[in-house]
Image (tube, rainbow, N blue to C red; front, side, top):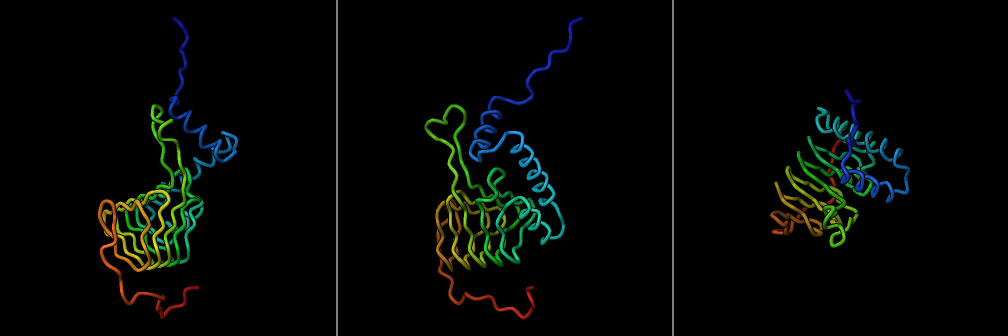
Length: 187
């Protein structure tokens, strides 16, 4: 009987993608792999952790730039490869099962026509992103805006706006919004 032949357990697609992202960060593949694994574990723990402020802390540990008193819902996916490209302002809320992706790329066969691109996502202060929204790379959402449930945000949203739909569009300007009025100490 012959010996057992060990075949590659990582696909060519995974090798190409992994190498491409490691090169982007000018990182050793092993170091990048360990960082990615750490971030994956933190994301999985954050996805179901029952205390909202801890979910935010786990995402901050991954590199997501979250302001103070940010609410992060259950099962939120901040870009898995480039979490540091996402910024969320103070007092904002990201609802359950939202996806924020700061990168895009084509498949192995379409890579020449549709290469990997990476652009930041910036969410202002006091923004409410309702459950099930998708926010794509390069988008900026202005302060005190509301994004309706299940919307797909593919372009900038001006401050003090209510936006919804696929793709999301501003349907109403919000009057009377502005500085946070609180009666508690937010230290």
